Image (cartoon, rainbow, N blue to C red; front, side):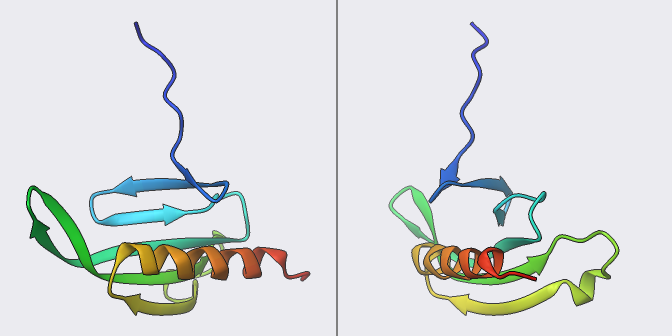
Length: 97
């Protein structure tokens, strides 16, 4: 049976993963968060992120890729990175421009 799979979300916003990149938010919005796992370690059978880059980026197609990054930081865990990402994205999308 080919059922419809549910999209993964965090705090009501979509998450998309490709290898070590995770995009948080919708590309239809003005901003999106890009998380990149830079380093990880093995804990039993799982790879656990130990260094994660977080970037708040503009989604406008007419902006050069190097000019898209609005804010960036690095965190020691995926949990800490997602916490910062949720706050940054919420604040950026709630601004009236």
